[in-house]
Image 1: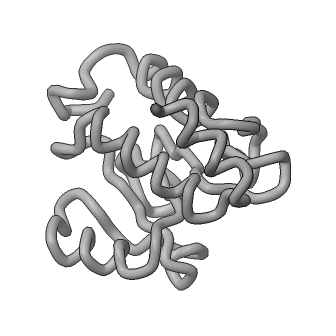
Image 2: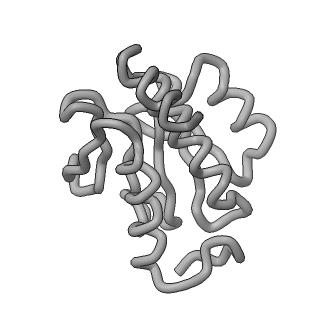
Length: 133
């Protein structure tokens, strides 16, 4: 179970809320990738993966997501207790986000939307902007 006050509750509530955030974006679908819930745009391009129970030698809950250029470095340097460079996708600028630290749901929503915007086609960005207005 997560220790962060913003994440208290049953572990299932973390995955359900994270899924809702990602699936609320235009043309997103979820399917497992490497054993974890992963979120794809139009079934092709992924933008976030949830590792609610850790993975390999990482024993804390986290997710990884795409990030705009320069954001990974800024987050990791600014708050290394919450953000990290993840294995496998870190070289592409993705960021790891610990779910057992002080990252709240509003920030998670922003990170997921930024991840989506980093890889989504322009037409879908227009849909998202129209939906947000």
